[in-house]
Image (cartoon, rainbow, N blue to C red; front, side, top):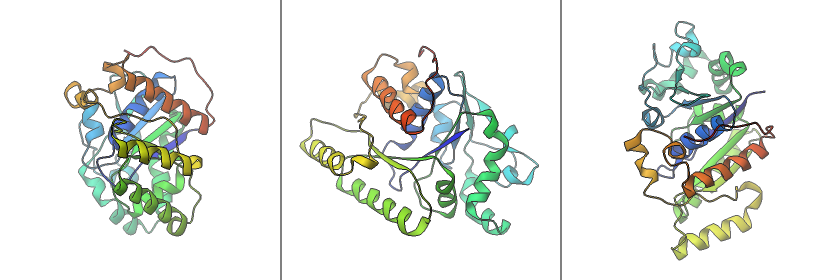
Length: 260
């Protein structure tokens, strides 16, 4: 059965897109056929994977039957990794849901249903905002990943998201927080990470993704970091992060590919 994972935080600048791209690439390299949906109208994920930020017919075409999702998906340069591109019209998804008179979760299911049999994993890079569309997505995912940086404001947004899920979503969501862009040389970063992991072990992933100027080269290389720096420490840590995710989703271990 296809597993759906959302990478989401209401705060921007926390490594959401970087994590989405590299985790999707890691999943594909481990033998899981993966669809990466760039739901953020900004289209950074599509850009990193050399895919044009455009879908035919806009967001309305995804459910009208005129331009089904099966015809919108693009192959990446990497085996088993495909992309459903971003489009500026995604900002109108809430309006489309209201016009259709549908529950947002049903709307998301209708978009993804035609391709679920074709993929082992669907990873969604979400825009940094709470909306009816995001609420619908969170009701259908198998796992919600929340990248966070070790600052007080970031932890505040994590609590806000936990409150939203508990009080407003009215649906059980398996949520896991992980830290990215961490500089363990900074006392504040160390203290925040250590205290959070100690107090929130049940909702946390243990792998910590450090801050690295090398990762910023994704915008130059237009490729997942794990592929143009396969021997880098950060690549190894993304592998460990994927191992945690794979265990949570109870996915079978598969023979993977050598990173290139």
